[in-house]
Figure 1: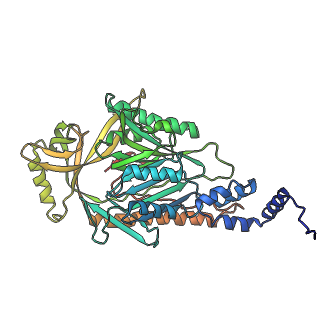
Figure 2: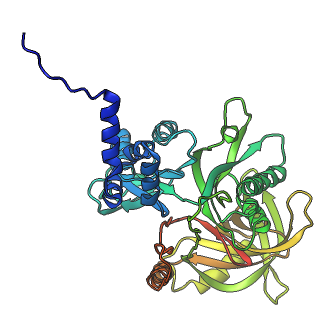
Figure 3: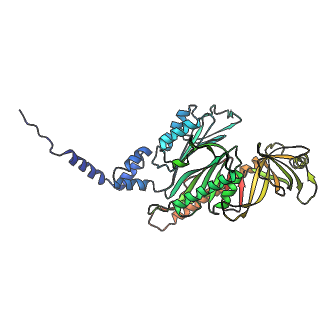
Length: 468
Protein backbone atom coordinates (compact mmCIF):
# COMPACT_ATOMS: atom_id res chain seq x y z
CA UNK A 1 0.00 0.00 0.00
CA UNK A 2 1.13 3.54 -0.75
CA UNK A 3 1.73 5.70 2.29
CA UNK A 4 0.19 9.19 2.16
CA UNK A 5 1.85 12.12 3.94
CA UNK A 6 -0.08 13.66 6.77
CA UNK A 7 0.37 17.04 8.37
CA UNK A 8 2.20 16.74 11.65
CA UNK A 9 0.71 19.96 13.03
CA UNK A 10 -1.60 19.39 15.97
CA UNK A 11 -4.97 21.21 16.31
CA UNK A 12 -3.55 23.38 19.09
CA UNK A 13 -0.62 24.42 16.88
CA UNK A 14 -3.02 25.34 14.09
CA UNK A 15 -5.14 27.45 16.48
CA UNK A 16 -2.03 29.24 17.73
CA UNK A 17 -1.01 30.07 14.14
CA UNK A 18 -4.50 31.37 13.41
CA UNK A 19 -4.43 33.40 16.61
CA UNK A 20 -1.07 34.89 15.64
CA UNK A 21 -2.55 35.79 12.28
CA UNK A 22 -5.36 37.75 13.92
CA UNK A 23 -2.91 39.40 16.31
CA UNK A 24 -0.81 40.58 13.37
CA UNK A 25 -3.85 42.19 11.76
CA UNK A 26 -3.52 45.93 11.35
CA UNK A 27 -5.20 47.68 14.31
CA UNK A 28 -7.08 50.08 12.03
CA UNK A 29 -8.35 47.21 9.88
CA UNK A 30 -9.49 45.25 12.92
CA UNK A 31 -11.25 48.29 14.36
CA UNK A 32 -12.91 48.96 10.99
CA UNK A 33 -14.24 45.38 10.85
CA UNK A 34 -15.49 45.47 14.44
CA UNK A 35 -17.27 48.79 13.88
CA UNK A 36 -19.43 47.13 11.20
CA UNK A 37 -20.70 44.31 13.41
CA UNK A 38 -24.23 44.19 14.89
CA UNK A 39 -24.45 44.58 18.66
CA UNK A 40 -24.65 40.84 19.49
CA UNK A 41 -21.65 39.90 17.33
CA UNK A 42 -19.75 42.91 18.65
CA UNK A 43 -20.32 41.71 22.24
CA UNK A 44 -18.97 38.27 21.32
CA UNK A 45 -15.94 39.78 19.59
CA UNK A 46 -15.07 41.74 22.74
CA UNK A 47 -14.62 38.40 24.54
CA UNK A 48 -12.12 36.91 22.05
CA UNK A 49 -8.97 38.39 23.60
CA UNK A 50 -7.63 41.40 25.46
CA UNK A 51 -6.51 42.95 22.18
CA UNK A 52 -9.96 42.57 20.64
CA UNK A 53 -11.59 43.89 23.80
CA UNK A 54 -9.36 46.96 23.66
CA UNK A 55 -10.26 47.45 19.99
CA UNK A 56 -13.96 47.20 20.84
CA UNK A 57 -13.50 49.81 23.56
CA UNK A 58 -11.95 52.14 20.99
CA UNK A 59 -14.94 51.62 18.69
CA UNK A 60 -17.30 52.56 21.53
CA UNK A 61 -15.22 55.34 23.04
CA UNK A 62 -18.06 57.89 22.77
CA UNK A 63 -21.62 58.05 24.11
CA UNK A 64 -24.17 56.71 21.67
CA UNK A 65 -27.94 56.77 21.26
CA UNK A 66 -29.56 54.38 18.80
CA UNK A 67 -33.19 55.10 17.90
CA UNK A 68 -35.83 53.77 15.50
CA UNK A 69 -39.58 53.92 14.89
CA UNK A 70 -41.94 51.36 13.36
CA UNK A 71 -45.60 51.73 12.41
CA UNK A 72 -46.03 48.11 11.33
CA UNK A 73 -49.61 46.95 12.10
CA UNK A 74 -48.26 43.78 13.74
CA UNK A 75 -46.95 44.55 17.26
CA UNK A 76 -44.52 41.63 17.12
CA UNK A 77 -43.13 42.67 13.73
CA UNK A 78 -42.90 46.30 14.84
CA UNK A 79 -40.84 45.25 17.85
CA UNK A 80 -38.54 43.13 15.69
CA UNK A 81 -38.06 46.00 13.24
CA UNK A 82 -37.01 48.59 15.82
CA UNK A 83 -34.75 46.17 17.67
CA UNK A 84 -33.23 44.99 14.39
CA UNK A 85 -32.38 48.60 13.58
CA UNK A 86 -31.05 49.85 16.95
CA UNK A 87 -28.98 46.69 17.47
CA UNK A 88 -27.60 46.61 13.90
CA UNK A 89 -24.50 48.55 14.99
CA UNK A 90 -22.08 48.21 17.92
CA UNK A 91 -23.67 49.35 21.17
CA UNK A 92 -23.61 48.23 24.81
CA UNK A 93 -27.09 49.00 26.20
CA UNK A 94 -26.87 50.99 29.42
CA UNK A 95 -30.58 51.90 29.33
CA UNK A 96 -33.61 51.66 27.07
CA UNK A 97 -36.76 53.76 26.73
CA UNK A 98 -39.69 52.86 24.49
CA UNK A 99 -42.93 54.70 23.72
CA UNK A 100 -45.83 52.76 22.23
CA UNK A 101 -49.32 53.28 20.87
CA UNK A 102 -52.56 51.81 22.26
CA UNK A 103 -52.22 48.61 20.19
CA UNK A 104 -49.42 47.20 22.37
CA UNK A 105 -49.66 45.12 25.53
CA UNK A 106 -47.15 46.35 28.12
CA UNK A 107 -46.38 42.89 29.51
CA UNK A 108 -45.51 41.42 26.10
CA UNK A 109 -43.35 44.38 25.07
CA UNK A 110 -41.45 44.49 28.37
CA UNK A 111 -40.77 40.75 28.25
CA UNK A 112 -39.48 41.07 24.67
CA UNK A 113 -37.19 43.96 25.67
CA UNK A 114 -35.76 42.07 28.65
CA UNK A 115 -35.04 39.06 26.44
CA UNK A 116 -33.19 41.25 23.92
CA UNK A 117 -31.34 43.56 26.32
CA UNK A 118 -30.80 41.41 29.40
CA UNK A 119 -32.22 41.59 32.90
CA UNK A 120 -29.63 44.09 34.14
CA UNK A 121 -30.51 46.84 31.66
CA UNK A 122 -32.90 49.45 33.14
CA UNK A 123 -35.97 49.83 30.93
CA UNK A 124 -38.91 52.26 30.91
CA UNK A 125 -41.87 51.58 28.64
CA UNK A 126 -44.65 54.17 28.34
CA UNK A 127 -47.88 54.63 26.41
CA UNK A 128 -48.11 57.98 24.60
CA UNK A 129 -50.53 59.97 22.43
CA UNK A 130 -48.08 60.25 19.54
CA UNK A 131 -44.58 59.34 18.36
CA UNK A 132 -42.09 60.46 15.74
CA UNK A 133 -38.67 59.35 14.62
CA UNK A 134 -36.68 57.75 11.79
CA UNK A 135 -38.33 54.65 10.32
CA UNK A 136 -36.47 51.39 10.99
CA UNK A 137 -36.81 50.21 7.37
CA UNK A 138 -37.06 53.29 5.14
CA UNK A 139 -34.93 55.63 7.31
CA UNK A 140 -37.47 58.40 6.63
CA UNK A 141 -38.89 60.55 9.42
CA UNK A 142 -42.36 59.40 10.42
CA UNK A 143 -44.93 60.86 12.80
CA UNK A 144 -48.26 59.60 14.10
CA UNK A 145 -50.65 61.00 16.69
CA UNK A 146 -53.52 59.28 18.45
CA UNK A 147 -56.28 61.52 19.82
CA UNK A 148 -59.27 60.16 21.74
CA UNK A 149 -58.89 56.76 20.18
CA UNK A 150 -58.55 58.17 16.65
CA UNK A 151 -55.51 57.82 14.45
CA UNK A 152 -54.08 60.12 11.78
CA UNK A 153 -55.63 59.53 8.36
CA UNK A 154 -52.28 58.69 6.79
CA UNK A 155 -51.55 55.85 9.21
CA UNK A 156 -54.16 53.18 9.85
CA UNK A 157 -52.46 51.58 12.85
CA UNK A 158 -52.44 51.82 16.63
CA UNK A 159 -49.20 49.86 16.99
CA UNK A 160 -46.52 52.51 16.52
CA UNK A 161 -43.39 52.20 18.64
CA UNK A 162 -40.26 54.29 19.03
CA UNK A 163 -37.26 52.72 20.79
CA UNK A 164 -34.20 54.50 22.23
CA UNK A 165 -31.19 52.53 23.48
CA UNK A 166 -28.33 54.47 25.06
CA UNK A 167 -24.67 53.86 25.81
CA UNK A 168 -23.12 56.33 28.28
CA UNK A 169 -19.51 55.48 29.24
CA UNK A 170 -18.49 57.10 32.50
CA UNK A 171 -22.04 57.07 33.87
CA UNK A 172 -24.18 54.66 35.84
CA UNK A 173 -27.88 54.43 34.98
CA UNK A 174 -30.73 52.96 37.03
CA UNK A 175 -34.53 52.98 37.04
CA UNK A 176 -35.73 53.95 40.54
CA UNK A 177 -39.48 53.76 41.28
CA UNK A 178 -41.74 55.65 43.66
CA UNK A 179 -43.74 52.74 45.11
CA UNK A 180 -46.94 53.86 46.78
CA UNK A 181 -48.30 51.71 49.60
CA UNK A 182 -51.97 52.09 50.56
CA UNK A 183 -51.45 52.73 54.29
CA UNK A 184 -48.40 54.99 53.91
CA UNK A 185 -48.81 58.78 53.47
CA UNK A 186 -47.78 60.01 50.05
CA UNK A 187 -45.38 62.55 51.59
CA UNK A 188 -43.40 59.78 53.30
CA UNK A 189 -43.17 57.75 50.09
CA UNK A 190 -42.01 60.81 48.13
CA UNK A 191 -39.29 61.41 50.73
CA UNK A 192 -38.19 57.77 50.37
CA UNK A 193 -38.18 58.10 46.58
CA UNK A 194 -35.93 61.16 46.74
CA UNK A 195 -33.62 59.53 49.28
CA UNK A 196 -33.41 56.37 47.15
CA UNK A 197 -32.18 58.50 44.24
CA UNK A 198 -29.67 60.33 46.43
CA UNK A 199 -28.45 57.07 47.99
CA UNK A 200 -27.97 55.38 44.62
CA UNK A 201 -26.14 58.42 43.24
CA UNK A 202 -23.89 58.60 46.27
CA UNK A 203 -22.96 54.92 45.99
CA UNK A 204 -22.01 55.38 42.32
CA UNK A 205 -20.38 58.81 42.29
CA UNK A 206 -19.69 59.90 45.86
CA UNK A 207 -22.08 62.88 45.60
CA UNK A 208 -25.83 62.91 46.23
CA UNK A 209 -27.12 64.72 43.13
CA UNK A 210 -27.15 62.97 39.74
CA UNK A 211 -26.38 64.65 36.44
CA UNK A 212 -29.87 64.12 35.08
CA UNK A 213 -33.22 62.48 35.80
CA UNK A 214 -35.86 61.43 33.27
CA UNK A 215 -39.09 60.78 35.17
CA UNK A 216 -42.40 59.31 34.03
CA UNK A 217 -45.37 59.88 36.34
CA UNK A 218 -48.71 58.10 36.59
CA UNK A 219 -51.45 60.22 34.99
CA UNK A 220 -53.82 59.42 37.89
CA UNK A 221 -51.39 60.74 40.53
CA UNK A 222 -50.60 64.40 41.21
CA UNK A 223 -46.91 64.69 40.28
CA UNK A 224 -46.39 68.29 41.40
CA UNK A 225 -45.40 67.44 45.01
CA UNK A 226 -42.89 64.93 43.63
CA UNK A 227 -41.37 67.47 41.26
CA UNK A 228 -41.14 70.08 44.01
CA UNK A 229 -39.31 67.65 46.31
CA UNK A 230 -36.86 66.72 43.54
CA UNK A 231 -36.25 70.38 42.75
CA UNK A 232 -35.63 71.05 46.44
CA UNK A 233 -33.36 68.05 47.05
CA UNK A 234 -31.16 68.07 43.94
CA UNK A 235 -28.41 70.52 43.09
CA UNK A 236 -28.93 73.34 40.62
CA UNK A 237 -26.84 71.41 38.10
CA UNK A 238 -29.19 68.41 38.01
CA UNK A 239 -31.48 68.49 34.97
CA UNK A 240 -34.90 66.91 35.50
CA UNK A 241 -37.31 66.31 32.61
CA UNK A 242 -40.18 63.94 31.94
CA UNK A 243 -43.86 63.28 31.45
CA UNK A 244 -46.28 63.71 34.37
CA UNK A 245 -49.29 62.27 32.52
CA UNK A 246 -47.99 58.86 31.58
CA UNK A 247 -48.92 55.21 31.70
CA UNK A 248 -45.85 53.07 32.14
CA UNK A 249 -44.10 49.92 33.25
CA UNK A 250 -40.42 49.60 34.09
CA UNK A 251 -37.63 47.13 34.74
CA UNK A 252 -34.82 48.05 37.11
CA UNK A 253 -31.35 46.58 36.96
CA UNK A 254 -31.69 45.96 40.70
CA UNK A 255 -34.29 43.20 41.16
CA UNK A 256 -35.27 44.50 44.61
CA UNK A 257 -36.67 47.69 43.03
CA UNK A 258 -39.07 45.86 40.72
CA UNK A 259 -42.77 45.44 41.47
CA UNK A 260 -43.78 41.86 42.19
CA UNK A 261 -47.01 40.14 43.17
CA UNK A 262 -45.72 39.81 46.73
CA UNK A 263 -45.40 43.60 47.09
CA UNK A 264 -48.68 45.35 47.91
CA UNK A 265 -47.75 48.57 46.14
CA UNK A 266 -47.87 50.25 42.75
CA UNK A 267 -45.49 52.73 41.10
CA UNK A 268 -46.67 56.35 41.13
CA UNK A 269 -43.59 57.36 39.13
CA UNK A 270 -40.26 56.01 37.94
CA UNK A 271 -37.01 57.92 37.47
CA UNK A 272 -34.20 57.02 35.09
CA UNK A 273 -31.20 58.32 37.02
CA UNK A 274 -27.86 59.24 35.37
CA UNK A 275 -24.99 59.39 37.90
CA UNK A 276 -21.26 59.79 37.36
CA UNK A 277 -19.21 56.62 37.75
CA UNK A 278 -16.34 57.33 40.12
CA UNK A 279 -14.66 54.11 38.91
CA UNK A 280 -14.81 54.99 35.23
CA UNK A 281 -11.94 53.79 33.05
CA UNK A 282 -8.96 56.04 32.40
CA UNK A 283 -9.40 58.19 29.31
CA UNK A 284 -13.20 58.21 29.39
CA UNK A 285 -14.47 61.77 29.04
CA UNK A 286 -17.22 63.57 30.94
CA UNK A 287 -20.80 63.74 29.70
CA UNK A 288 -22.85 66.92 30.02
CA UNK A 289 -26.64 67.25 29.84
CA UNK A 290 -28.41 70.30 28.46
CA UNK A 291 -32.09 71.04 27.88
CA UNK A 292 -34.09 73.58 25.91
CA UNK A 293 -37.69 74.43 26.70
CA UNK A 294 -40.36 75.10 24.09
CA UNK A 295 -43.32 77.20 25.21
CA UNK A 296 -46.73 76.36 23.76
CA UNK A 297 -48.84 78.72 25.87
CA UNK A 298 -49.41 82.49 26.03
CA UNK A 299 -50.21 84.48 29.19
CA UNK A 300 -53.46 86.40 28.96
CA UNK A 301 -55.31 88.85 31.19
CA UNK A 302 -54.44 90.21 34.65
CA UNK A 303 -53.08 88.35 37.65
CA UNK A 304 -55.49 87.03 40.26
CA UNK A 305 -55.14 86.11 43.93
CA UNK A 306 -56.97 83.05 45.27
CA UNK A 307 -59.56 84.19 47.82
CA UNK A 308 -61.03 80.83 48.81
CA UNK A 309 -60.02 77.28 47.91
CA UNK A 310 -61.85 73.96 48.17
CA UNK A 311 -60.34 70.64 47.13
CA UNK A 312 -62.08 67.51 45.86
CA UNK A 313 -59.25 65.00 46.34
CA UNK A 314 -61.35 62.11 45.03
CA UNK A 315 -61.68 63.89 41.68
CA UNK A 316 -58.34 65.77 41.83
CA UNK A 317 -60.20 69.04 41.21
CA UNK A 318 -59.88 72.43 42.96
CA UNK A 319 -62.75 74.92 43.40
CA UNK A 320 -61.74 78.53 43.95
CA UNK A 321 -62.77 82.18 43.98
CA UNK A 322 -60.31 85.01 43.41
CA UNK A 323 -59.62 88.73 43.40
CA UNK A 324 -57.97 90.66 40.61
CA UNK A 325 -54.53 91.83 41.71
CA UNK A 326 -54.85 95.15 43.54
CA UNK A 327 -58.63 94.91 43.98
CA UNK A 328 -60.81 93.75 46.88
CA UNK A 329 -63.87 92.37 45.07
CA UNK A 330 -64.14 88.58 45.29
CA UNK A 331 -65.05 87.08 41.91
CA UNK A 332 -66.83 83.80 41.28
CA UNK A 333 -65.92 81.45 38.45
CA UNK A 334 -68.33 82.95 35.92
CA UNK A 335 -67.09 86.51 36.44
CA UNK A 336 -63.46 85.40 36.25
CA UNK A 337 -64.08 83.60 32.94
CA UNK A 338 -66.03 86.60 31.60
CA UNK A 339 -62.94 88.76 32.18
CA UNK A 340 -60.76 86.24 30.35
CA UNK A 341 -63.22 85.75 27.48
CA UNK A 342 -63.10 89.50 26.86
CA UNK A 343 -59.32 89.28 26.68
CA UNK A 344 -59.59 86.30 24.29
CA UNK A 345 -61.67 88.04 21.62
CA UNK A 346 -58.90 87.51 19.08
CA UNK A 347 -58.13 83.99 20.28
CA UNK A 348 -61.53 82.30 20.22
CA UNK A 349 -60.19 79.41 18.15
CA UNK A 350 -58.11 78.18 21.11
CA UNK A 351 -59.92 75.88 23.49
CA UNK A 352 -57.22 74.79 25.97
CA UNK A 353 -57.15 77.19 28.92
CA UNK A 354 -54.93 76.97 32.02
CA UNK A 355 -54.07 78.90 35.13
CA UNK A 356 -50.42 79.21 36.06
CA UNK A 357 -50.14 79.27 39.87
CA UNK A 358 -47.04 80.78 41.44
CA UNK A 359 -46.45 78.75 44.58
CA UNK A 360 -44.11 79.70 47.42
CA UNK A 361 -43.78 76.71 49.70
CA UNK A 362 -41.62 75.43 52.54
CA UNK A 363 -40.08 72.19 51.35
CA UNK A 364 -37.98 69.53 53.08
CA UNK A 365 -37.01 65.87 52.77
CA UNK A 366 -36.94 63.71 55.87
CA UNK A 367 -35.43 65.59 58.79
CA UNK A 368 -33.94 68.38 56.64
CA UNK A 369 -34.57 71.98 57.64
CA UNK A 370 -37.43 73.40 55.49
CA UNK A 371 -36.49 75.87 52.78
CA UNK A 372 -38.71 78.17 50.69
CA UNK A 373 -39.13 77.09 47.06
CA UNK A 374 -40.88 78.92 44.22
CA UNK A 375 -42.62 77.03 41.42
CA UNK A 376 -45.00 77.74 38.56
CA UNK A 377 -47.66 75.02 38.18
CA UNK A 378 -50.15 74.87 35.31
CA UNK A 379 -53.69 73.61 36.00
CA UNK A 380 -56.21 72.95 33.25
CA UNK A 381 -59.42 74.97 33.52
CA UNK A 382 -62.48 72.70 33.74
CA UNK A 383 -65.13 75.44 33.87
CA UNK A 384 -66.83 77.98 36.09
CA UNK A 385 -70.22 79.00 37.46
CA UNK A 386 -71.76 81.57 39.81
CA UNK A 387 -69.91 80.01 42.74
CA UNK A 388 -66.48 78.74 41.74
CA UNK A 389 -63.80 78.40 39.10
CA UNK A 390 -62.95 74.71 38.64
CA UNK A 391 -59.43 73.57 37.72
CA UNK A 392 -57.63 70.25 37.46
CA UNK A 393 -55.23 69.18 40.19
CA UNK A 394 -54.65 70.10 43.79
CA UNK A 395 -52.06 72.01 45.80
CA UNK A 396 -53.45 75.55 45.36
CA UNK A 397 -53.76 77.59 48.55
CA UNK A 398 -55.59 80.75 49.56
CA UNK A 399 -53.34 83.71 48.80
CA UNK A 400 -51.60 82.07 45.81
CA UNK A 401 -51.30 84.29 42.73
CA UNK A 402 -52.19 82.96 39.30
CA UNK A 403 -52.56 84.06 35.71
CA UNK A 404 -54.44 82.55 32.79
CA UNK A 405 -52.63 80.89 29.89
CA UNK A 406 -54.00 79.58 26.62
CA UNK A 407 -52.52 77.06 24.21
CA UNK A 408 -51.20 79.00 21.25
CA UNK A 409 -49.77 77.42 18.06
CA UNK A 410 -48.51 80.86 16.99
CA UNK A 411 -46.34 80.91 20.11
CA UNK A 412 -45.38 77.24 19.91
CA UNK A 413 -43.95 77.37 16.38
CA UNK A 414 -41.34 80.12 16.91
CA UNK A 415 -40.62 78.64 20.35
CA UNK A 416 -39.79 75.31 18.69
CA UNK A 417 -37.55 77.16 16.26
CA UNK A 418 -35.75 78.76 19.20
CA UNK A 419 -35.19 75.33 20.74
CA UNK A 420 -33.81 74.04 17.44
CA UNK A 421 -31.55 77.09 17.17
CA UNK A 422 -30.32 76.67 20.75
CA UNK A 423 -29.37 73.04 20.21
CA UNK A 424 -27.81 73.79 16.82
CA UNK A 425 -25.65 76.54 18.37
CA UNK A 426 -24.67 74.15 21.15
CA UNK A 427 -23.49 71.62 18.58
CA UNK A 428 -21.58 74.33 16.68
CA UNK A 429 -19.90 75.36 19.92
CA UNK A 430 -18.81 71.78 20.58
CA UNK A 431 -17.59 71.33 17.00
CA UNK A 432 -15.54 74.52 17.32
CA UNK A 433 -13.95 73.31 20.55
CA UNK A 434 -13.13 69.99 18.89
CA UNK A 435 -11.59 71.70 15.85
CA UNK A 436 -9.36 73.92 18.03
CA UNK A 437 -8.34 71.13 20.41
CA UNK A 438 -4.54 70.97 20.74
CA UNK A 439 -4.58 67.60 22.47
CA UNK A 440 -3.28 64.54 20.66
CA UNK A 441 -6.32 62.66 21.90
CA UNK A 442 -9.53 62.63 19.83
CA UNK A 443 -11.78 65.67 20.42
CA UNK A 444 -14.02 65.14 23.43
CA UNK A 445 -16.99 67.34 22.48
CA UNK A 446 -19.79 65.43 20.78
CA UNK A 447 -23.57 65.65 20.48
CA UNK A 448 -24.98 62.31 21.47
CA UNK A 449 -28.64 62.24 22.46
CA UNK A 450 -31.89 64.12 22.58
CA UNK A 451 -35.35 63.24 23.87
CA UNK A 452 -38.41 65.23 22.74
CA UNK A 453 -41.36 65.55 25.12
CA UNK A 454 -44.83 66.69 24.11
CA UNK A 455 -46.40 66.83 27.59
CA UNK A 456 -43.62 67.48 30.01
CA UNK A 457 -42.10 69.15 32.98
CA UNK A 458 -38.55 70.48 33.13
CA UNK A 459 -36.33 71.60 35.99
CA UNK A 460 -32.72 72.67 35.65
CA UNK A 461 -30.33 75.54 36.42
CA UNK A 462 -33.22 77.78 37.44
CA UNK A 463 -34.85 78.99 40.63
CA UNK A 464 -38.28 78.18 39.25
CA UNK A 465 -39.66 74.72 38.56
CA UNK A 466 -41.94 74.65 35.55
CA UNK A 467 -44.64 72.00 35.76
CA UNK A 468 -47.03 71.47 32.85
